[in-house]
Length: 108
Image (cartoon, rainbow, N blue to C red; front, side, top):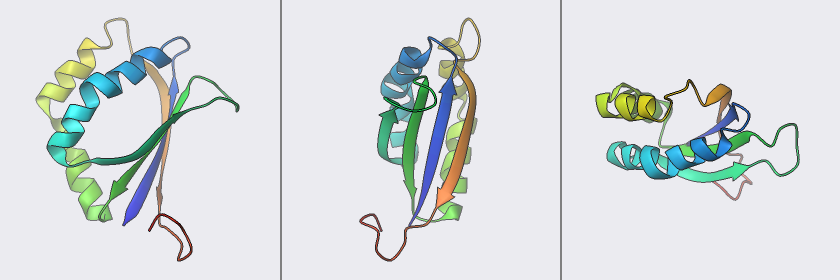
């Protein structure tokens, strides 16, 4: 099992729109492609309260590559994402890390 930690740095004031897009658009596509989320968080105390941090679970790096590529290239996802951004992108930048659990981690 591998995990992906992603942090989205939202355009100021757009955090609610990004959260809404995940809840009402993205999750349907993730279910379609078998993408599993571990959790989602907003930043209460930290560098920016305009960040969304989330973690995905993958069976392997090959699993991630196949499922993420299929999701990202889905024409319906591309259309729906564009429809949520009529005034421009909602996310300024993002970062991601692929993680492997240690032998003593509660998450394996």
